[in-house]
Image (cartoon, rainbow, N blue to C red; front, side, top):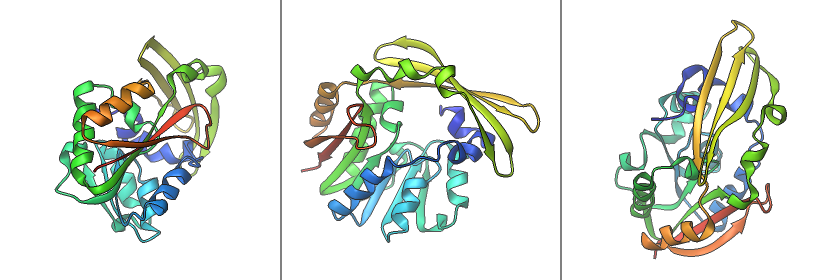
Amino acid sequence: MTDDCYAHPRLAAIYDALDTDRSDLALYLGMAQEFGARRVLDIGCGTGVFPLLLAGRGVDVVGVDPAAGSLDVARAKPGGERVSWILGDATALPPLRVDLATMTGNVAQGIVDPPAWRTTLRAAFDALRPGGRLAFETRVPAARAWERWTREHSHRETDVPGVGTVTTWVDVLDVSPPMVTFRWTYRFAADGLTLTSDSTLRFRDRVEVEQDLVSHGYVVEEVRDAPDRPGKEFVFVARRP
């Protein structure tokens, strides 16, 4: 199951307009250059923002995502034909040998089921060439990001071209560490439609993630700080020996 904010056609179509600040991707673009990555796998590619940035730099990119609505948006973007898009999770991958595998944004935290998380790490490992790297971020649990996920802090109106004004806000539904469940509400002014999307994230601590990586054969090279959110996220870089 994928969250409606990624899968529902009307919500997938406005996702980029509601999330215009993708400064977080500069870190991953920098790593692709730092590691000399010529072929990249982006797990949970969503509407394709990161794969298309890489493709624009001449990188061979494979983007995989289980949300058909998001992939439809990605394929329709200028340059979409330059990326290999795959519908499904990491288990849907064909045989690959990539230099870098990534999970940007909330992707790693959104894989909340332990067996699914282990399967994803294993599939990414299998897709990497020897010496290739996996890079992803996850929020620092101690920062308690969910305490700021309130209607008061999130309520806003966005003028989406071709759609009209969309009002959005978030409410936390349940906090049962390491799991946090929340609901985004979307109200379309043009026709009065209101849609909601429930999501659950898993807040793993640093030790847990490092142990998971090592148990799947990775060498944890470093844990970086996210430059756009210092002190609030771990950025893991792990290598296939």
